[in-house]
Image (cartoon, rainbow, N blue to C red; front, side, top):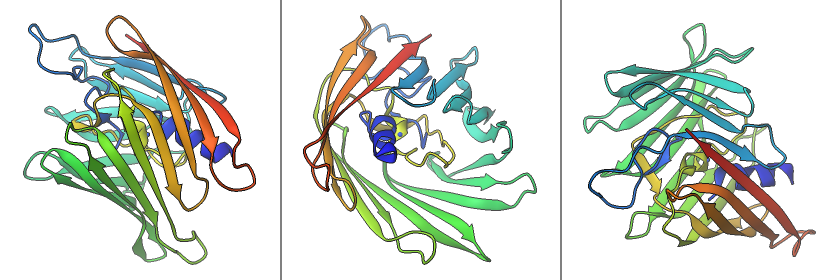
Length: 279
C-alpha cells in the first residue's frame, strides 16, 4: 500500500522531470493563453506530500528564473542543473553515495531525445529515450544495463485531449526473468479545471529509486484533473481531487480521496494530500 500511495500522490497528483511535464514546469511562464503583459513565471519552491519525506521536491532558481538545483525526498537525491546556452546539458547528483550525471542529448528540433545515467567511472547504467508528435511527448523507453547488454525495462505512452491536456498514460514493464514480472497499467485523467498545473513532471518520475529527469519544455498537463483512474495489473483505483488555489491561480493544496477498486481492500478509501509553496 505504501508504493500505491506514493505513486498516486507523487506521480498522479494530478498524480511525477522527465520531469517537467507541464506548461508551468518550474521556471516556465504560466499557461492559459497570452495575456498582455505576460504573467510572472511560476517558480515552484516545495512540494510536500502527506506521510512522505519532506519536502518531496524542492527547487531553486538562478537570476534568469531557470532551475539551478532540485532535490527529491528530503535530499535523497540532490541535483545541480548545468546548462549549455539555454538547454539543460546535465543534472549532477550530489547526494551521499551517488554522484551520477544525467547527460542530455537533443534532436534536430531541439527536443530532448535521450538522457543517459552516467556513473562516476563514465560508464552508462541507464538510457531514457523520448519520442514526440510535434511538441507533445508521446513515448518514453527506459533501458538498463544488465550483464553485458541493455534491456528495456519500462515503456510509457501518452495520449492527449484536443486541448493538450494528458488523457491517458499507459505504462508497460516487460517480463525480465529474475528481475520483474510483465505488467501494464493505464492512468486516465478526467475533468480538468482551469487552474495552473505545477506538478505534471511527477507523472514520469514514478519510481522512487529512479533519477529525476527534467524536461522544462514538455507539456503534459496545462490544468489539474478532478479524477484519475488506474486500471490494469495490480491495484485499480480512482482518485477524486479537490484543489485550493491562490490569487494567481496556482495550487496550494490538492486533497485526494483514493478509492480502491479491486483486491481484498476493494471499497477502502485513503485520503492523500499535497501542498505547494512558491517563491
